[in-house]
Image (cartoon, rainbow, N blue to C red; front, side, top):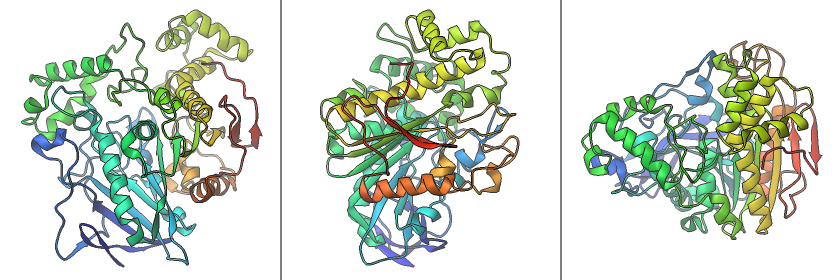
Length: 484
């Protein structure tokens, strides 16, 4: 199948649910100094561009294994070198009587890794069910998110905005409805979605949004700490002009050397708890902007997983030996009065082991609290807001992984049958997966993309009420929450 875009014609290949087009550029290749500028329009091409095979991905360090857990299905093939990596993959359904709703998905990976080519993001099921899926590659790490005095902040987010403009101009050519675009993301991708909702430049580009386990954002002061450390590691001033002469290989190699930075400032703790030195740098959190009415007309599906923090503990062997001191230290990463926080979590979870408390506090600090704040902000401003909590627990790593961060993705994309997801060190473990969970979860996302209603009640102005998705499927009107 051949489709003509605003930059030229592309040839796709047949997929189970329609046609897939891989590596279609939405912006010019970011090279040299342009790695640190806003994205520019692609110059286009003559003839028919082959979009039947995977293209390049953003420069990034290898992340296929996380401790003892195989994370290759989530992170994908890693860095596939090539300058033209600001691209989208398009999964187009068989054309029907009316244009298909569009889902634009932004991958996670700590703002430093990941791509549209991860097996988890296979879009065949969405295309099969009548949704035009567009998965986005964007700049990562230093090029995408390092705060620099002579460059625009959040260049990876600017890439996503450019991709949305490309979708507005080209969705119809693939059979999609440019007036029915849902922007979705998970983890770093969800945080970017929140930043897009708070950005006035997104007006008219997004009708609905999905935030799966979004996190907090850095202040300018915290961004400056990361920039200073990056400059010292590379031996150059932390400016775009100086970094323009540094190779992609060196920019990638510096990422692991930035681990462990102390990003606490007088204004507050590190909102990402030390798991990554990169993130959005904003003058105020997106939830504050959204509470003021930004994105009021955008329907929002938002939630997190029951055991988010387990991903950062179980694969590294940190759960079994957890002590009360570890629990307190985890609380101190996010709260000024950690003793009071631990006491509150103990009261809400009578009999919980230190490992369970540590998992809960870490998961809430990273994703639970930011999720609830955004939901309350959007609902309080009058926006249609639908909350969820994913509760199915994997048996991976001897049952320690549970309903960890990332766990909902195979069910959202209906890719839970992938062989690479099954085994004692694979995401879904070696046990059985509920036969209907992927179909039911995926169907809720499809329904939301198509109608703005996932199939359960919207939250009230206080941002309460969530759908539990897992072994049980029920709406909880007044969930018990420990964190703010």
